[in-house]
Image 1 (cartoon, one colour):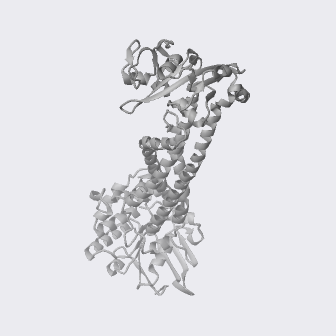
Image 2 (cartoon, chains in turn cyan, blue; image 1 turned 180 degrees about the vertical axis):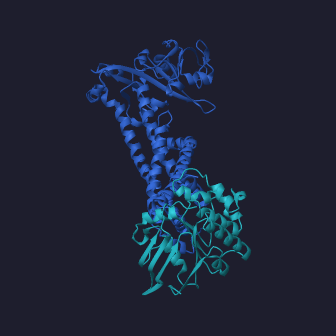
Image 3 (tube, helix red, strand yellow; image 1 turned 45 degrees about the vertical axis):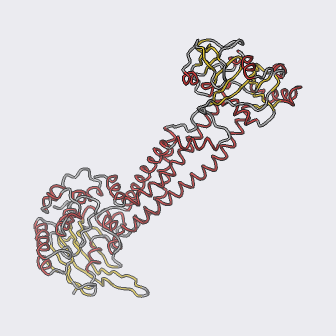
Length: 226
Length: 393
């Protein structure tokens, strides 16, 4: 599943991460000195109440946002020191994203959505699209549009898309937040299966069942590790 | 899937907005294309008419030289005449190689069609070097030389004895038929000068004299001498090149104005493209954020927006060129009514390179219009975009 030649067992090393936002004249601290390590192949759940800083942390781990201070090492690279181009490259090659609202492009078919990371990575052909759709049990939905799918199916497509570039790390933001219990359980099972295959999985969740399925939980409260 | 396919799916998402944006580009391109094609057609048409006339100077009765040139070229009944005696004075001016006297009269038939009779001497052949005659040039005793189109319309053949249309009780033998000239000569009915003067009751009178110079570069000197001869005060000496130059200047002044309007239309359409893209980018903020999150670079997003623009502009400009092609007859008919002088040849002349230049122009303008929205889309920060509520994803 992974394409890295890295041998270090530590995939992520976060040290004293803070993130502040200006709100009028005030400064809001979404993260306040968060530190942790995540090993390769771990399944970690980031939990906490709304406003605890879970999604902010996930965005920083996914290189879509920068910490205000602190250091973040991901796949052996000091992310907080990277330029936008290098962080984009890291997102493209090492990270898969799954969003609560699926984030599928409505104009594309299921197969085209899954092929999108390959296009972005300038990879010719869609050789692994069929295999990925089969993996998430949607090979029969190849030419359907997202609007023709159920919530669970859309999330499966999003997971297939996140795996398209064979990432080291899968980040999921409330992946079961928009799904019913039964569909949510199927998605949890899929994450578990991917983790069993060696993929490092980090999910932000309110879902107790999903949190329990993880090896470890990082609980946040008011921007700090509880 | 390719970037081109991805971008094409995007603009198809909003067909009405895309259609309106493309229609703006199409109209502007059609205007530009028609204008450039008209310029080329008009220039070549004028040059062709001048060549076919074979004369450098037109000697006409006093009056407006532009009307006279138009009547001599396209055929008409003349309101006033020259004395035939002036011909000798014109011929005596040094530098005049050939002075061909002409008597022209036009009649309308009952069906409204005009028949133009032109009386000439055989020295007209020195001017009309491109003429090819099936049969013979008519003599002073009678006979007609028909233009190809006139012969076709009336069903005339060489040797036929025919009634002269519009001239009651008069007949003549068709001694010759001209091969097609692609000009007004095709519709004229030529006869010998004396026969025409007799037929129309204007003995010793001419409508105009076509003058060919031995050295056209000495035009000014010859014209001065013609104006200075005894008959100079009774004649209007019209250097055709000057007339055409003046007419072209008038037409091109108008064209410049129209060109400014076409350029303005192109700028307005570019503003429309830019505005439409800005709206699309704003609506897709979250979607762009997701593309960035899954690894798209700023350059990828910039390229995506530019490709969308190029497609809309290419389709719009292509449609505009096709539209201009199919509406050219209507446009040409209208333009002819507005011009002081219009050649008989098509005014709008199609050239592939003009179409290509218009297409390229529309694409360049479209690309310039896309820079701002594309740059704005590329600068969207993925984390902020994913927090956006309004953007669709």
